[in-house]
Image (cartoon, rainbow, N blue to C red):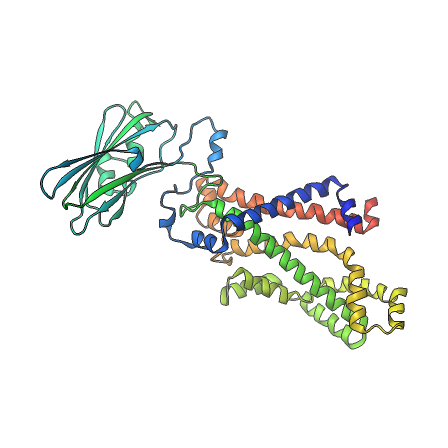
Length: 441
């Protein structure tokens, strides 16, 4: 095996494949370390409130470097960015004035606007009014608000009364250049929040959220979730599923083929008949039925896949190898000194043919990775885990291509193709090394 690995590094295709495999392993390790399993599930399956500060369906931030326009990253103006003044009007009433300055430089309009009120009171909530002043001196009032909770989200872009009074979506009207309505007005926007509190210990702070058009290294989906979480965790899940299925199925098939070839007779006939029965049973429909009627858990699907392929069609190929090895002189020598049947099978027969089976094992990994992705695209993916296939399923289900969210499809598809490409390069190169006849092709 050491000589085979040294030989492997002599092929450029194998070096590229090993580099891809190292990248995937590093990505998987990084994902597990930085985002533990439970945290990944909590982030991906949590409510939209967990991601409320993220823009919806935003493209990756690096796209900004590929376009002539200056795109907008989400801007959050908090208490540290505000000028706050408190005026005492009576023993119980005070007026709080909070002023923000927003220096807008982007060449595109925001996607949404929101104001988060964070109040402290016992019984009587504060009364709030939001005023927006544009760089050219126009002034807009959002009307008076009464926060319904101590942390109250006022989604400006969804205020129907405000949309009616502005004759358009706030995120566009407030930033519109009067001389060119299709272009945002750059400059210093002023947001003034006037609040009245009615208790001695009452107070209020606010955050202004201007949602951008780009976010992070991978963008966001329809639920504002960071797609980077699914791209990262898709690596360990894809590798675990692909390697687990390929290893389990290959090992079980080798064992059954070796037992049948060694014992021959009734045992060999039984293994061959079971193999032929398995060859006419379709895998994908059974997995679909398991997903529909029992469980969509990726680990259940993996277990069913391995059990279903304990004796697969490759048993016949392995059996032919073992029939040749069965008559080898070293097997006769083992029998002559009294080696038992199981010792011969597991100690002499199976290890002898493993080098020739490794290329098939490597080449089978991407097939099972694509199988998991296919089940997810069909809506039968694991509902808990973030995977590449689940990303594709969500993207197609919410019209990503129709609405122009190409990154949502291309990112997981690219990683799936890279995974398949890497394992294929390694597998075919190993096939040349272990099968010398292929070197002439």
